[in-house]
Image (tube, rainbow, N blue to C red; front, top):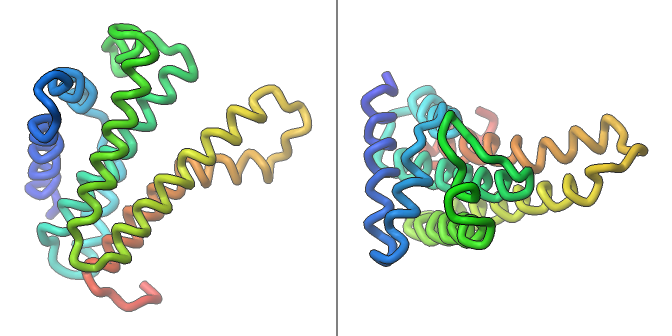
Length: 184
């Protein structure tokens, strides 16, 4: 049901590198090229399929949420001083922290730019809010990294912000694009 659309998403993600200045295109190709599980795009497409027909706006949404996720991975790898991800050298291991952070910023900005193309401007605004929530969650996690008083509730809030908010946006916005009933 969703496999052909997921392949479209994969192709569109790879094509995004051409949107960047040629001087940084190679960095983008590397960042988007390590195929992950693509869970967020898959969720968006599954919700779209369950609430109607999958259309090009659903594919666009799937691309956007994955670009945001990739941007967060670039930043996470810097924060964690990771040297490998998916059996490949991380961007920061290859080019240093500065370029890796800037590359993540470029992908965030590009995803937010793409989100302005939806006819329904509320979708773009929701994506921007979600990106802010993800970043805030990362900041709070970093602030509280060694906090021995961190409660389970605090931890779950951080996880909800960092991870859950992007999954939630993928599902909810796919339903909005499908014009599904609000209680779906």
